[in-house]
Image (cartoon, rainbow, N blue to C red; front, side):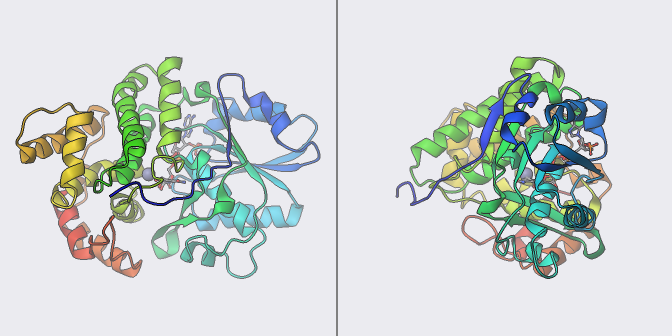
Length: 387
Ligand code: NZQ
Ligand code: ZN
């Protein structure tokens, strides 16, 4: 066993720190006609948008407002139409993961010939060109600011599906921690949980003696455990917020996943809970991960013990006990952020089990996990244990 073969290339420029939004002037071509894409208005209220507009100087620009949390195909297509009609040639997403993901989809859909929903059903593989785009993220969570993925929902058909394509790396992302101070507590908690589970999806598989990704992953988990509660309780503590933001970006920019097996079952099952019940993404993960850890404890034995010992400093020779404690510590961490970790806390009853299994079958998500052995029947047990 050894580090698996990999290629790693991340072309996104990160500009980090306070007072950095003005650098948009250097990052966007002077002749660009810019469409700024935003969500429901938080960036107006916290004045990020006005700073962005000022930084664009004399460039022509317009604002497309209304990307919803868990961004939809339907709304994104309205932006696509606007771009086609008015010939915008640069897109600037200003907002959370939903705005960033929608911007990626829109960038890939503008030149797409045919029904753009095919982009989603093909997982993004059929995108062949994009309108250039960059981001000013305002919610540390998804890692979308430095990766080539996105997740798009379609309300009319109950689908929430991921897209990936190397063309979907943003050209740049400007991370100014002060622009996240206005986040409500529940969104900060969601963000800490989402980043935590991104690391776990790439770390908690089976050991391949990959020292570099393992130690990076453990360092990032410890950072979230230390800085997460700090930034939740003191939103304007710059130091804590800065550490949280960089940890969230590093959690899903390809680095810690290079050379190791990856799981992603928690995410795929979680997406079904979001589209069916509207539960926030980070919360679906906090509900499912402890149950998945327990269900898959034989397959994940080696890494569960490593996680318990190195991240939670658990002692002793009884490995089953270490695993039990590691799972309990994980659940307690989510709960300490104010996230409830059972479906009943969200008024979801046992009828969810069959519905999730049906969705997984319909989406052909029938061989999840690092070994492809999380079948819909295994997922059924994971959801049952999460009730
Ligand atoms: O819509 P506005 O008014 O902007 O308000 C948003 C929204 O209501 C608000 N918000 C964002 N920044 C704020 C703020 N409120 C006050 N101050 C600020 N600075 O927060 C709410 C949630 O925003 P959203 O963008 O939906 O949250 P998040 O960043 O958690 O993104 C979640 C989406 O990302 C996908 C998820 O599935 C979900 O659709 N993911 C994307 C990934 C990727 N691209 O790699 C990976 C992830 O696993 C995830 O699946
Ligand atoms: Zn996630």
